[in-house]
Length: 70
Image (tube, rainbow, N blue to C red):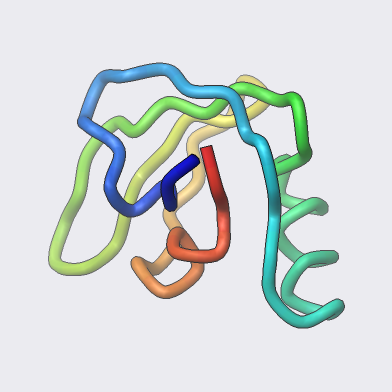
């Protein structure tokens, strides 16, 4: 298990855990980062990570990506 921030570009992964404070966890789950779901890193741009999750493209900060484990 490793944070999403360390995932390779183009690699599809399964989300194993979403951490952080309850409000952060809820926010990430509302964006589609749920345990068992798939996430694919599209690109990293100046500290932000662009991912495909649940048929949507989402940009999250590296700090948020550290709370999502794959």
